[in-house]
Length: 120
Length: 113
Image 1 (tube, rainbow over the protein chains, first blue to last red):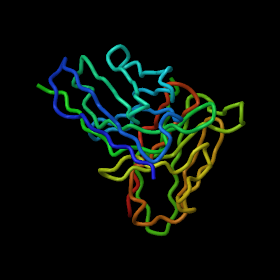
Image 2 (tube, rainbow over the protein chains, first blue to last red):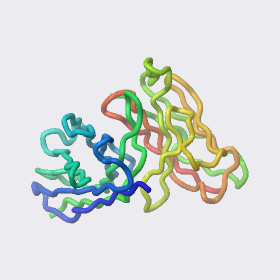
Image 3 (spheres, chains in turn red, brown):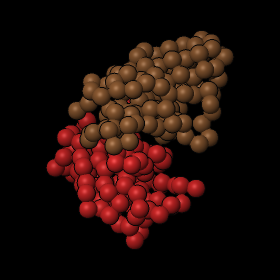
Image 4 (cartoon, rainbow over the protein chains, first blue to last red):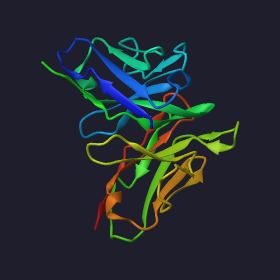
């Protein structure tokens, strides 16, 4: 059974930093690209970033480019999202997800989500 | 970026009746390499993560009830719930994964009338 367990969220002041983690189990982690998707309170879904299985290739939404870093440690089956220079508009539940597809990729399995609140 | 627009924003359907949600993209999401449309449908219940229902516009995930079906091609897509059940109350999202960034529709809230 695929499981994705996120941690690291919480309350942070504007301009601060936070690192989210997503521990994966139930599949060969290094074989799958992964993504982060967020959802502001009461709002829809917004893709944040994706990373290849090897970690060599990453993509970011324009809204987080230069501030967020997506990385992974395949030896620990763990995905990370380093979030710097946080803004109020980054307040959201952050989901990690496995990517599936052929040539193009969609989110198949999702974690339970981790709330990040940016406020003073 | 490809913009995804769903209609309606919400709908109320009687138990056992059909629910239809539309999704339109600003450009074609037909992937020439496999001649499939890069379009997914997700179901999200309150307090839960999204659940993948359909990929490639019409391929239902294992375990998803067959009352859920997806159709369409190019820029126009539809999710149909053939006979609404109480457990289908949720928000439904379409997503295109044809190009980066992948983008979602704004969501359609389905309720019981």
